[in-house]
Length: 179
Image (cartoon, rainbow, N blue to C red):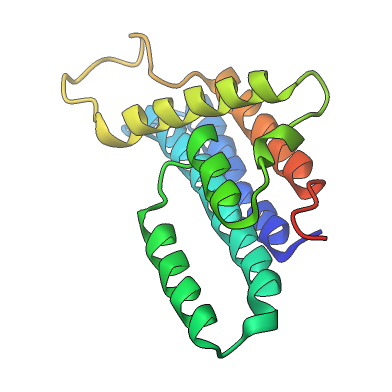
């Protein structure tokens, strides 16, 4: 298991704890809007995915560039990599594929096979999750909706999202980037 995967497992626990907190808030009488915990959970879970991809890429890059350590070529490519990673946010399937392909000439998304997922379905689910994350993070509930109204993120969806992201990381871990 890569260090990136170990970090992901720690990060995803934060999302799982938020979900447990939501469940606790639902069982008690509280003046707080527990729905915000579900949105935060989605943001945290997808942030764990983003961090995993960046860390995994960095790990592979270190191995890849080791042969030219300290050379002008390594310095140039490392600087380009740092710039690319600064701009690498919202790691949907296309951006993730492009990042690994540009540096390592591998379509990492083809490794996204597990349980009931094939790469095409995994890409679709990931892209939908990240779109929902954008809505959860950037569209606050400014209309003062009551808890009985429909919510952006449903509890069951969060369980599925966390399981999906864990499976996606496991599948990505099986991908051999460098020989």
